[in-house]
Image 1 (cartoon, rainbow, N blue to C red):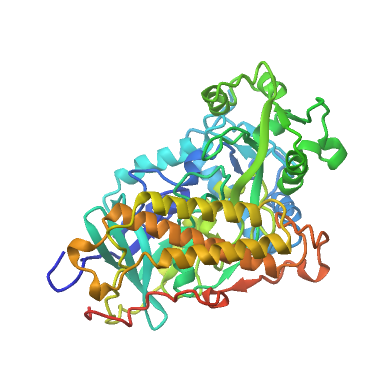
Image 2 (image 1 turned 90 degrees about the vertical axis):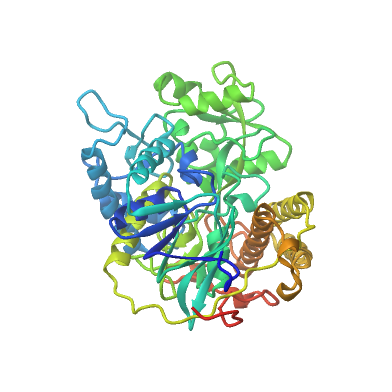
Length: 553
């Protein structure tokens, strides 16, 4: 740190926030430009991509076409998919996956070298490319992380918690982060958010603990446009065990023949939808959820899939064994859990947001490609496609030099705040959001969740102290700042999701309102998106604009 500023100032051409598939793809594509990649994890890789058991959907098989993949994407999205974006995703995705196959990435292949293709829910063809059986995400991001470590133009900052964007006249000028050694201002004209989803804002989720919605909250506080925040996809078949996060039983199991059974051993999905276990995820999740809510356990019989692909699911077998379960002997208990966020920071086809100098890609972004319900295995594809598109646009788009801007004050958290108190606030926030804005919602439950989240946000804000009154030795250490920041982000994201869910008085895709059970035809044209900004939440603090400066850079 310098004597004239409260923290270090570090310069870069581009800042990438997030170490999942989207962030690493963008950083690698930007070489040899000077990139700083910031991640709050202890190393590479991070994010939900690491835990993705499903594969990558791409029309690379005989007779399959990107247009067919796009049609399936549109159909799954319940009328809200931007058809042009779906066409872009599937066209670019097919070319990109072919290139990865040609580059020798470790995808599962037949003896002749062609990719082994699986089928998953709502796909009209077998087009899912896997790596390591059900360890596609881990295999892919581990390979990219190895490449990133040998890329000299990329500087990786681990254990670094991104706190807020720094703005001047609506333009992004950098990012404020809390590092183990203290506060750092990363000064850069270009910032890419690739922070993943919001699963850990819910009490039951398949996402890792770091998925606290940081990028969405950062963009919201900066005033960026957001959209479709009410659309949270619940994965139908999370293992019903006491764990956080809950283990996922990949959809590829159902694609390979696994079936859902009720307590009596009856296979119920053929009664729910013509595609049975391969119906869209929202349909399968609600069919399971109704039974679980009524106290009836639901089971996934893996044995048909394990017989069909004996070596295809090592991750699933390990997860079951970890919890003392034997899928060869009996069906596995399952229940839905929060899994993927279709909403996010509004971007165009190149990842540009409504703020100059800010891009977003991956799950934190809302491109319109998922609509109200993401098609299975389009998530890793989205990260690859838009990570690459963002990198290309960032590299090619000229920006004027950064103007002088005021150095913002970091939020001051009282030093005597305890882990226990922050953990308790975070846990209450997760429970409130899961109970009020879970798989099935209604107006009364959403209002109750809003009141609870508002009270928790007010309580958390009281743990801050005035910067002028906070002596250096009385400030909270970085681990407390991170816990406080994650709780702040969880609460803001939860309030935004609830606000959006209250505003959409219909049921569509992953958004199910029991008090408005039917879709409203006027909302299903796929051409409009429901946007909001932080100003839609009355009483929420605004962004760090840099106007309250302690010095000028």
